[in-house]
Image (tube, rainbow, N blue to C red; front, side, top):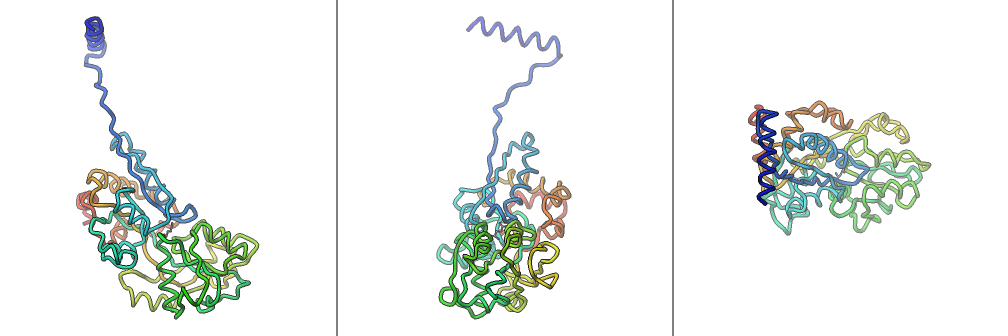
Length: 331
Ligand code: GLU
């Protein structure tokens, strides 16, 4: 022991002699692990989580934050997992954020999710209906009696599909054969003729619709302009009108029109009040300070501005994010 101590002192002395300073103390590196809940791998949430994680992980040494991404069932699952503490962050449709905060839709029994906090909003998502040409479906009313994927439980799109069908006077439990598979499985089922159509609420372009329009089965995007007009009036906190440039993005589809009109939502990034301010501050700061490189990570982000990333948030903004917004004058 004494020998070891002597050796240590000698080492320290040598170090000071040669460098003029004491050796750096080795601090126990404390890493905070955070996970972002996203969606299916053919959607846009998954690459969005990846884009955020990529930017934050570059500063791992500075912040001690290690960000990972998880593919999940979607918005509803993400809200619930952030609330239970299984995930620190989630990408969530803004209509679902509103419903969770107010205790509506899937949260009717659980009540308002008081701990939910908004960080920022991201790209627009379109409630998109695609059908095989052979099914003869040209309008939403033609879905009667057909096999239609409305979305898996836990996804954001499930309630959007039900809202669209209800607005068209279609009862999804009685008037059609509703399937509840994950969005990543729907294009394959459409191509194989095992479903006639599917709904997916997603940013464009997305892998799911590239896959759906690239096979031997010819498919058509079904515009929903009248449904959009009704729903933006009925649910002004949930929906907005959006359009999808289908011809440009999906040349394999049979549509004659360049653009289809439908309704949609904004994707948003949420967390819990329990996640420490410094973690939320660091993630917000890194995304906003690297805004131009972030925007390049997905074609869906082309219309993003720092200002519109603070729109469409119904949960209170997390204090860590607010600290950054105040510092830079965004709030
Ligand atoms: N909007 C979908 C949902 O909330 C996910 C879309 C995506 O993964 O890009 O379930």
